[in-house]
Image 1: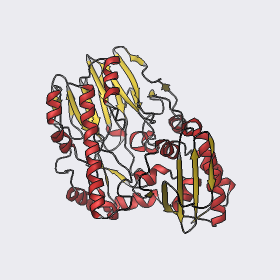
Image 2: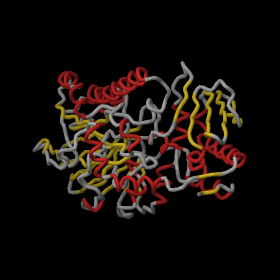
Image 3: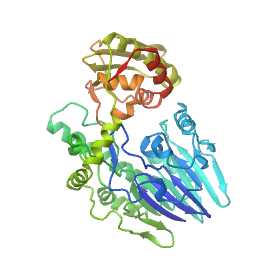
Image 4: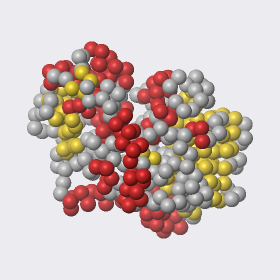
Amino acid sequence: MIVTWLGHAQLFINAAGKTLLLDPWFAEPVFGGAWFRYPPPPYPRASSLPPPSFLLLSHIHPDHSGPGTLAQLRKTTPTLAMPFPSGAMERRLQRAQYTDVRWQQPWETKEIAPGLKITFVPHDRGWEVSSIVVEADGVRLYHGNDNPLSVDAYRELVKRLGPIDIAFLPYAGASSYPTGFGGDAAVMKERCEKKKREGLQRFEEGIVGLEPKEAVPFASSWALLEESELEKNFMDRPTALQALAASMLVASEHDTHLLHLEPGDQWSPETGAIAKGLTTGWDNDLASVRRYALQEKERVTRAIAEARKATWSFPPATLDLAVREYFEAMIAAAGPTLTELTLNAGFVAEGAGAWSMRFAPGQPPRLESQLLGDEDETLVLSAGELGAIVAGPATWEDVWYGYRLQVRKRQGAGDHRAFWEMLLNFDDEQLSARLAARFPLAIE
């Protein structure tokens, strides 16, 4: 087995006489014009690589399986993925006109070619994401992408599938938290450091649970290149070198060898890591990202403008009708995932309206066209962006991972994962298209 790390969560694997491409990201920016690949990708387009024998997709995020990336790959490529309740991945592949999609159930191991086995591992707390285990040539590889598991779940994986030879493990999260939440400089610093520690803990827990022979920190090869957002890079997420330094003792205790790979580097059990030097000079620090943003300024400016080209404007009364129908459809689609949710949520479209959404076990959710003052979480965004989410091409992921969503959280309010899963997984393009046709929303 020969593994090439392409950057972020992308792996290109030569094994058992076949080639596999996992979680590709070739089209940028993603998340509403916010994320660009960084360091500069050594394989910038799908055509930079040989066509893969198989395409493996872990989940729906556009930096792992985006429409622009899928458009660059052959539509006849045998594509493997795990089905999720929302059906979002199925719809994406249908829209991309992929003709050979092979759905694989959680924990189901399939021999997709002689001597080549694939298993999709579900998240142990119900997120719509999966890990991928590849077995070939006497090597068992774990691809963790955005799927941090508990230590017990990692141990269950080893119990079911056997020891892991090399594990690619996530070590940094990304979202509007904490930079999209209120607080002074001291509070912000404390929250950012806490989020960094949580990312490092993810990496360590993968080592403790899997006890792989070798472990690689990965899935954080991106940067915000918009001038107004540059300072947020690395503010709340650690670097790969920090993950390696923080986990040295844990790795030693579990007989795991730590590997530092850069995009473009290769690994095989015979050679170990081979440094290709394809991203030399581009470090994971703010100064380097600033230099790259300046170098790419014209391209970045053009790409962001294209991603946000539509400005939505409409009367508040029309927006209210569209929002109500949109959320009613979203709640119906999310269905059973909300049955145990207790939450008072608020939404504010600046200058255009506000809504309160009430969830209680055993009762149908209630939506009112005003805030009631007892909201646990209130999401604030521009009226234009809310309109683009409701009846246009934008999604909640765009504003959440694109660092453009402000959240007012009541002190002491807990984590409401089912609510965020509804927003991130059940916002359907067909729903937005239907609402765009139904309501006279103007695009300027």
